[in-house]
Length: 156
Image 1 (tube, rainbow, N blue to C red):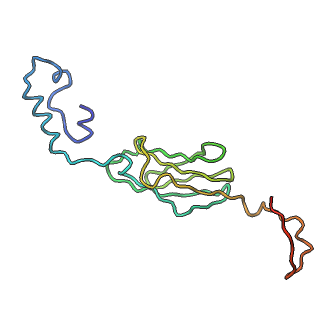
Image 2: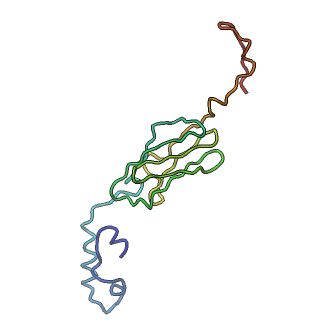
Image 3: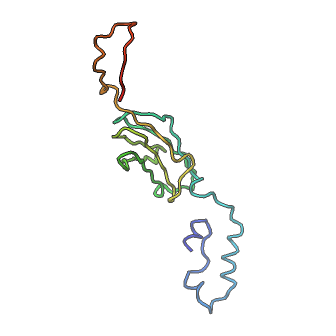
């Protein structure tokens, strides 16, 4: 009965009456006949999409993504997670604005996964590379270099 209500078919009888063998079967048939006129619904993952303009960000800088939802989507059923090298990172959803953010704390590849009713949505997962902050990269041994000179740099 709850599933029928969710699809837009209101019950004619109560569940107890439908299960009772002494109740006229035409009432149950009239209720079930309403289901034949329903249009097929999209799967939960197809009712929503996620998109992100960036595929690279730096540590401790918020990364933003957009959510495109149809009216059928229940915002309470939408979840998101970001899986990175250390594990799962906190992800905040603002369903009123159809957007979300997360702030990576570790360098490496991260995957943004958005779910609707437990099913991955279109466009998910999104791979995002997280690089270190440029202000924290040091170049030791580069001081005595002159412009135009050939210098050997060892990257480990």
